[in-house]
Length: 107
Length: 115
Image (cartoon, one colour):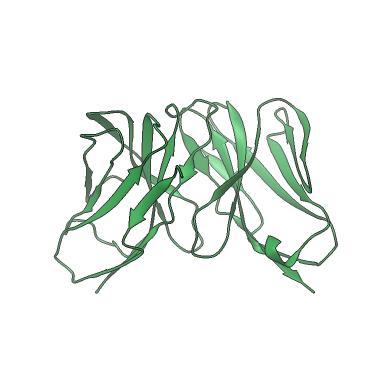
């Protein structure tokens, strides 16, 4: 079967660092996407990991361990506008989405 | 400005009526997708098309139909056979089809309410 797990909700304070985890068990793996989705809006692309390791892109970084079926999205220097849902999606022969993690950033 | 448009943003229909959701892209992408998003669930694939005049069922195609007569357009019809049509519908496109490393670009979505 195909299974992707993410925490449902997380909270953090402005200026802090937060790590959103994603574990997956899928038949096939070509890579893993992270998307950001503000309430009622379209998901927007954040990162794509194919190989193991950390990829940094400004305040956002994404990590992948294929042997552990594990990824995380790291958000630094949190801002209020980072309050959104973060979707983990595994690229097999199709894109399989997790249920998303709703992050609330408080002042 | 390139992008994906979906219209309308909100749509209300009576039970038993078919309704068509539009999706247009000017990104010159080969592949297009329709997803459904319900509270507490991940995006679920309804239909996808990797090339004009060809499309495949996704995981939850029952009660839906699509066409791909033009590269730019991929309308979705929600038929009266769909038992639970009220949802947020997202259209997406990518340069190439599923299984490739190309990210999907999403439209703004249509929120359909059927009463």
